[in-house]
Amino acid sequence: MKKEKKLKICVDGGSRGNPGLGACAAVFFDSEGEILREEGKYLGRCTNNFAEYHGLRLALQAAARLGADELEVFSDSELLVRQYGGEYRIKDETLAGIMAEIKKTASGFKKVSLSHIPRAKNKEADRLVNQILDNARHAPAGVDKTLAKENAAGKQPRLF
Image (cartoon, rainbow, N blue to C red):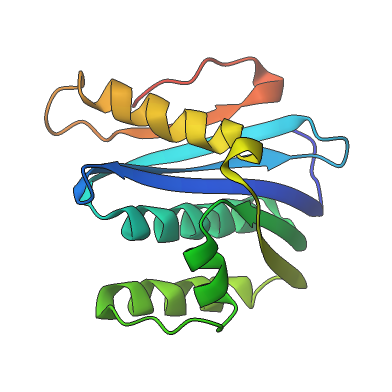
């Protein structure tokens, strides 16, 4: 994968049941809108908000590993976007702790923006979350259900 200093990233998280089985995902795009990389993670039983937060955390951690300097991040969770921006208070202690970690990671970049987009424009990240959740139902207990796919390498997503 070629190094991109500026990345556009779509993030998502979801749980089936809220709380229920959850997963998060991040899809990385180059300047032309082509998918560079996809990452996702199975989270086990969690709330939808927990999964959304982990989607953003996953994106920032992966972007740091990729050597990016500037990030434009998009989420269909208006709550996540407004809490990240400080418009809404975070009442849950666990989520507040995750947000503190997110902010610390974000401070390592030259620029990070987080914007709300409609769910219809977040199809790739949503697809990945659902793929992980569908595959997790069939994976044996104890298997690390993390997904990473690099589009340029032509590798198919897999659980490992």
